[in-house]
Length: 399
Image (cartoon, rainbow, N blue to C red):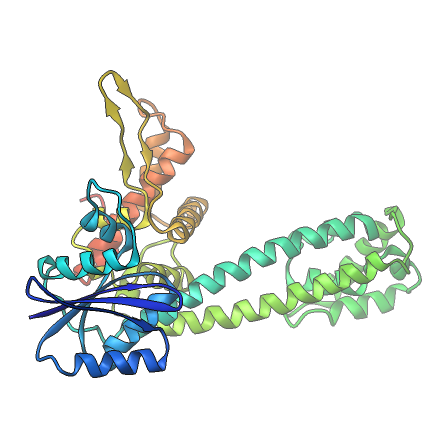
């Protein structure tokens, strides 16, 4: 049996070839078409082989694609797993030594299954989830910038609508970015502008009510700048950017849901009260193939909420979560728990019950501790439902 350890960097990869436990050859290839063609010719001389490499983000994806394209058996190790398996007492870190360590350890790894048919979908979905989170972060900055500008150009305008970032609120803010623009228009014109500012159904009476309120706010407002200030133009630019971003996010969410629905696990996750289609899609995208986790504790470690404990002699440190896992997954699940708690009055969910139980005496847990415990409970539920192909049942959940 031929074993190849590959240490991948940005531009090159070091390959160490062993036949059983006997060293054969070491060489370096460029991470480009010529390099992979050279590697292909070398590997075609072998009857049976296994390749092992460490997952290094975008750099290891080309090696993964190469192996799948030519149907070579491969192991892609998690960086932390690779570190534990290849560590020794001697500190000796080079690309060449890493390639040799990977090659020598490959025969101790469990047998791999052929790549799953859905692997490409998981990859595409995960990239969309990451981009979705990135756009959300950018939107939060835009929202902060818009409020800062409006506080200078039209203080009090945010009182017009309960949701200051709804499409109608943004349309009105873009049209009337300064109180002088409102004052110079008559009431009928304002009613018409407000009525046409949304695609959703709005009665004339409601538009008139908003117009009257807008006039009152404009007369009471005392802006820092006049209507010809650049800050007025800047506010409009930011509002347009936010509206465009919201539309892109809506389209991205729709595509994510369509992809996630192709996965068998989607319906099981979506059946949990408090989890909508978009949230279920984000869970599938960030966790990937949930059936690869043998227990919910493995998912805990993957997400990074497993407990880190330190005791030495008489020293006992407070238990904390590991935080070595998937930071974005922790972010997603924290938001999910908060949404489940907010919607508790609309449905029965044992995760929300568990949160309030932990907050009461004699437990008296802090909010953060209780939320982490609820994430653990939710991951356990998801793991059970997906692996047993079941839908959520509140009566069965406590068991």
